[in-house]
Length: 228
Length: 228
Image (cartoon, rainbow over all chains, first blue to last red; front, side, top):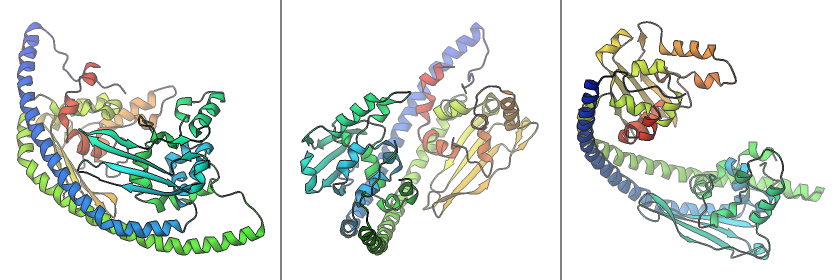
């Protein structure tokens, strides 16, 4: 629905003059407005900073319990694999070529809120058996925020022992026929370790906010599991 | 893309037995897991509570500056009308029947974070001229959160002097032909003052998080404005 005209439909040169002087005075008002906005934004920033301090205090408090959780998770076969695969967005986009590797995923680690801007580092830790497929066993991505923009501080370069899953997926998709969105389909979870990763399935955000925060929610999602 | 099998493809009765005893021990592990999760969630809740205290402290600090802003806004003709209409989600859904009334909108007020759960109250304040169309001049909706669910604590009942904009919009849409989503189109901004309002254009959230928080961003959105 296109929005309607918001300006009135009056016309005539005197009205035009009025509009001209009005627009000038509005400019002055907007300068004043921007100054106020600036002060409000500064207060918001100060607030976010204080809240982040609290967050980091609680992250510290959660650490021993997360260590306990890690030990429990190690007792459940393929816990992170199942949890990842049952996240609806990942379930929708994942390919078997990735799953063949992800079944060797041993642990996911998150170092969250590393600074006041909320930088974080995600590690995927694989078992020895993956070394036939790729190197190293620990894939790491460290994301920082500078001037409200996301930047990659550090990322592991994966060395594929043979053809990468992404190459296999791309080949598979290129062979597909019919009315499909090839660009959207052409997705590998390992794209995340590309410095310029920018898919709308934001793996970093999904792991940070969903998977690591509430893994049991996805692991126990029977609806997804029963669809198998 | 449908997700792949996550369980292994082994078979045989001994394997089935192992799976049975495994699933039992996994149940025990999950009980332990749930306990850990519970403790983590309690820490998260405690953290959110402390952060809300900070938020409310800063809301208080922002109050005098917001009062200044209010005075500046009063000098700009139809500021809130233009701001609302230039929000992309509202621009997409608004009908002329609503705009005829919204042009009398004098001010928007937000009482935010009224408690630790983040309850809030939105008021739309209209000028006298609207009294030919509806009553009262101040429309208010107070939303609270209980057990993580949104509930309407208080909402103004609008008394329409003649046919309501929603009735006009519904009539207009019912006359439309072709392949259109009538349910999606049938939207009035005044639906927000319905106790059971549940449209995917979440007016409360839009006003709270976008419009009131950064009105200038939308008011100065020339791209939208130039589409007029």
